Image (tube, rainbow, N blue to C red; front, side):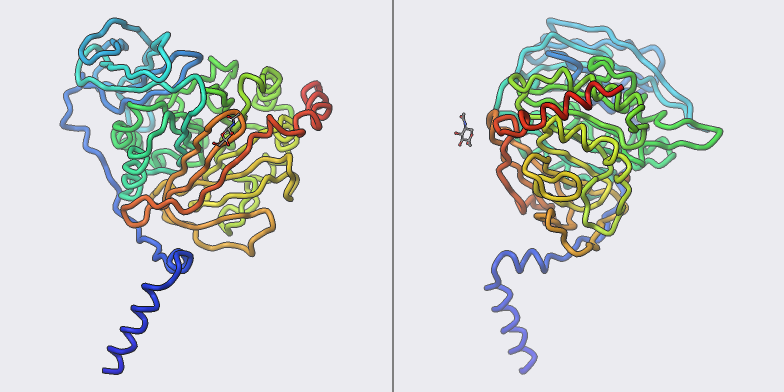
Length: 436
Ligand SMILES: *[C@@H]1O[C@H](CO)[C@@H](O)[C@H](O)[C@H]1NC(C)=O
Ligand SMILES: [Fe+2]
């Protein structure tokens, strides 16, 4: 009887508890099994692992794999189902990795394309038909963001939630497949993400799990570069590991944490040239995306971003970047505008969102919360960056609460383009851009 009474009191108190108590009591989910999409039942000429990316103004790159060598790198497309008024021929590649031999990896650029338009397309000239939507050329524009995806049951949950949210494009700050040297894992990842990645541009940068370097035997990024070709040539970069692109009025810098970044590196030289060309009137927003966070109060991966931050933060700060999205830490954290280790009204907001749902699980231990850290939580989920106009963007983070997406953090972010900051830092930027 007494125990029943205690149970009743606990139940009543729990039901009446305000939402923040519910968040604190949120039970971290256990790992969910790995999903390995089966590809063996497909005929060799059947296009698989279809994904798309932006490839310069008004163009998109369609990437897919066939298991035969004879299928053409041909995409037929048009704005009505089953009526293909245009076609484009692309290129193909393949690679060996120890005993593994990849299928034929096709990359074909299509365009010029209309903005905010649905296109229907077929790869290698055969079925099935896929459908994509091009991003808008003006605000509003909505970017989904999710890092460290992997291919667990939680990944599936995150992908389902992203599919439900209206977005124009996905930013992925590194760690895609978690194949970790076992190459068929890249194929099953490609097939798992196909429903979303064949419909909206997936713009990715690399994480540590994408390196797969074996000393003496295999250089890094063999699978990543062959499969996830990004518009680096289109943006004047010499490497698939760093590039930039414009979408609506946003200039997006996709940077590499696992390639050289010191002030004499190719990446830094390219970044200077890229920033020198930014016209804030045309792209009022500047976003940077990379894998290893610079501001992180989780105990996981402490200090790993320090060297890159020392090399690049002054330049990105002087360029008045608005937001930086990172992954690596399997949790969510948002900062105030920061620079040089502390809050700064002309610094940028850092958002760590390495909580896509990979098999390694969550990073749930934190250091004492620094003054610059606003919100942090170790749960799987995804983010949505809705840029309403030149000055305002609404950021929200959606936790996978069991299998429901629940908006847990949200904030309006103002672009620095309308502030005093760019003028204030103009001299500093010039000096950094002109430095040899
Ligand atoms: C931009 O959007 C915000 C939020 O909706 C709004 O308050 C503001 O007036 C808009 N600015 C312009 C110039 O339309
Ligand atoms: Fe990582």
